[in-house]
Image (cartoon, rainbow, N blue to C red; front, side):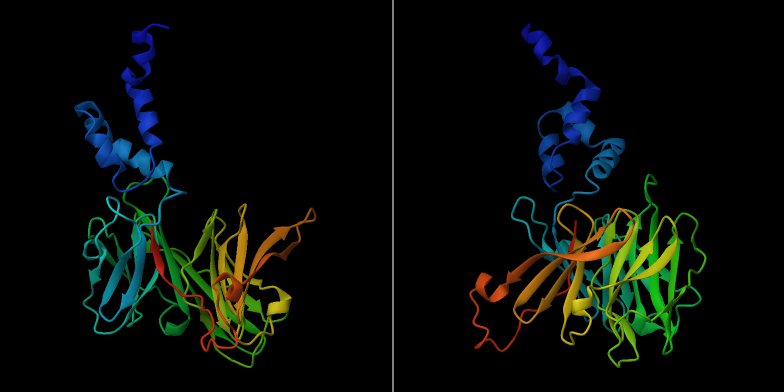
Amino acid sequence: MSPAAAAAPLDDENLLAEILLRLPPLPSTLLRASLVCKRWRLLVSDVRFFRRFREHHRHSPPLLGCFVEGDRCVSYTPTMDPPDRVPAERLSLQLDETCHSWVLGSRHGLVLISPNSRNHVLVWDPATGEQHRIAFPPGFVGVANSIHGAVLRAAGEAGHFQVILVGVGGQDKQHMRLLARVYSSEKGVWGALISPLIPFEGYTTRGIFAIYFRGFSALMLGNSFYWCLGGRSDAILEFDLERQTLDVIRIPPCLSEVDLLQFAVMRAEGGGLGLLSILGFTAQLWKRKTDCNGVASWGMATTIELDKLLSLNPEKERVQPLIERACRVQ
C-alpha cells in the first residue's frame, strides 16, 4: 500500500468525525483535539458534531464531581485532577431562597432543585447558567415531605428536557396513594396525573404512619426510574417513563424487619436493578432477577465486611458506616 493510500482515511471528513467521536468524554478532550490543526478545530467546534459527541457518550459519562445542598446555595465539589478538574466556583449556585433547598438529582448536564417552599422546582444548567422555575402541578401541593423527582434531556430534541415529579399523596392502614406527573419543556405543561392506589399487604410496616423518600437521587435503568422509600414502608418506587406507570417493589424479605437498615438502589453488576444494604459493619449487594416464568426476585450477589475492608474495630467504633447522599455531576 502506498503512503498516499495509507493517509487517505484521515483525509475523509466523515471518517475523521467518526474517529474523533470515539475520544474519551473528558472536559479537556475536545479542547486538545481542536489544537491539532484548523481542520480538526472546525470539526469539533461544529454544533452538530458536539451534539453527536454528547449523544454517543450519553450512557458512559465521566464523574466530574458532586453537588451538595446548603443554606441558600448548591456547592460543587470536583473529583477529577487537572486538566479535567472544574473549579468549584465555576459550577456552584447561589439561590435567592431564604431556606434550605434540596438537590433532587442531576442528569444529562441538568440539575433539579427543590426549594424548601416546596411550591416549585428549579432546573439549572451549570454549563450555561440557564435556570427554569416550574410551578408544582395540582395534586402535589401539600405533600411537601413526600416528594422527589428527576430531570433528563428529551432524546433527540436539542435544548428540551423533561421533569419527573413523584410523591406519596396519602395513606391509610391498608393503602398508599402514589403520584407522578411529567413536565415537558417543549410543550411547557405537565402531563396527566398518574395516581395508583397500592395496598400495604406484603410490605414492611414499622408502626410509623408516614412514608418518606430516603433522599437519594433516582436511579435510571432503561426507561425506568427508581427511588428508595422509608418510614412505614421500606420499599422501592418504580416509575416507567415510556409506559407512564407507577409501582412499588419490595426489598428482600430478610431485610424487611431490620429497624436500622440503610439501603440504596444501584445498577447491579452486569446490568439490572441492584440494592446496597448496610447493617452495622456489613454491606450486602443484591440483584433483582427474573426467571423464565417472568417472576422477579432478589438474590444476594456479594457480602462485604466493612470492618475488615476499612481496618475498623467494631467494638471501639462508636459511629457505624453510613450511606451518604450526594448528587453526582456527569
